[in-house]
Structures are given as C-alpha cells and as structure tokens.
Length: 324
Image 1 (cartoon, rainbow, N blue to C red):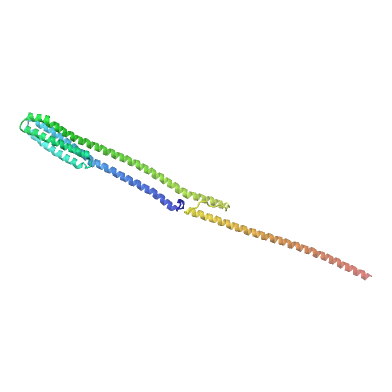
Image 2: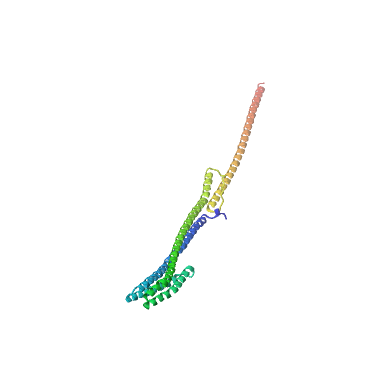
C-alpha cells in the first residue's frame, strides 16, 4: 500500500503517534539520566562526604593524641597528666569510631581505599607498641629517658601513621572531586542529549506536518482545477492523481461525473444531429411536394386554357354553322 492510499485520519494519527513516542522517549531518557545524576549526588553526600568526615575525624583524633601525649611527657603535674591521659583515651575512642566508619563506607570494589586502610592499620600496629613503651618509661619516672625515646623512636612511627591517615583523607578529597566532575559531566551530557532529541522532535514534527499538509492540499488543488475546468465547459479534463484516501475518492467521483457528462453531451449531440438530418429530409420532401403541386397547377391552368379555347372554337363553329 502506498502512503497516499492511507486514510487521512490514519496518516494524522500515525504522525502524531511518532511525535508523541519521541517525546515519551525524551522524557524517559531525561528521567533516567536525572535519576543517575541524583544517585551520584546522593552517593557524593551520603558516602563520599561522610567518608571524608570520618577520615578527617581519624586524622584529627590521631593528631590530638600526639599533642596530648607530648604534653604528658613534658608535664610534671600528676593531675594534669591524668587529665591528659583521659583526653587521650577519649580521642582514641573517636579514632576507633572514625576508622570503623571508614571501613564500613569503603566498598569492596575500591582497592586503593582498602589498601590505604591496610596501610593505616599497619602503621598503627608499628606505632602503638612504641608509644606504650614510652609511656612505660614515663611511668617509671624516667622523664628525660621517656622524652628522648618519644622523640627518637616513637615520634617517627607516629608521623608515619599520620601520613597514612592524611593519604586516606587526600584520597577521599580526590574521590569527591571525581564524583563531582562526573555529576557535572553527566548533567552536561544530559542537557546536550535532551537538546538534540528536542531538536530532532521539532524537525520530525515539522516534516510530518509538511508531508501531511502536502498529501492533503495536492489532491485538493487538483480537485479545484478539475472543477474549474468543468465549470468552464471543458469536459475532456481528467483526474491525474489516484489514491484510496478520501481525497482520492472525491477526485474519482469528479472524474466519473466528467466522463458521464461527456457521454450525455455526446448522446445529446448525436440526437440533435439525427433530428437535424430528419428535419432536413422533411424540408426536402416538402419542397418536392410544393414543386409537384405547382407543376400540377400549371398543367391544370394549361388544360383550362385549352378547354376555353376549344369551347370558343366550338362556339365559333356553331355560330358559323347557324349563320349559314
């Protein structure tokens, strides 16, 4: 079936359905991309940001422990030392809580994050015994020896520990930056895709509208031309377009009407010619009859004249005989 054979209503429904389907696809794609962007932002807020906060908590607690520990070694007041030891215990609890949260937020498919956590634990295992050793020396009232041990042995191990924690914090900053850039890129891609699909939908709608308009106006234009030709008396005009749509049916009816009118006019012309021929024959017969009557009248006149002459002759002969 040709496109022009499709009913006008069906053509319009198909055109609108195509445009509507494309619009639905645009909405669906936009919703999927926006959902993906939302998931990335949610992960950025609920995971990466919380991860960074926990990493900073680990680093801050570790630094506070180091500062309090050094203050403990420098202080000679027993009450102050006890207060600092309690503070160190509280910061140690915060450190454990922060590190535990970091482990919970780290995915199994994040090898670098897991590696950094393992490095922190390894540095912790190396630094904690040295720190405890320094505290034991301090507890034995060997302040100078404990301070020297703290600076020479414990401090480098703790510094390595802090560096490992800072590396984890830096990694979380990089992850947040990466997630943010990915969200921005996806947002830009979504905008570009929506713009392209929107332009495609507009172009398709315009194309469909033009095609539908031409498919309707072209037969109507031919219909007007044929009707005008018939109105001007040209019965030889014929319809060129043929389709099964409503306009094609109207054109076919006009073409049929033109053919029938031409047939009727032809029959009338033939009948008129026959009547004219018969009338001419009648005129010819009438003229012949008139000529015969005239001839008969002339003969009768001649006969009457001859009869009169004969009568006069008879009379004259009778008179002559009577006189004699």
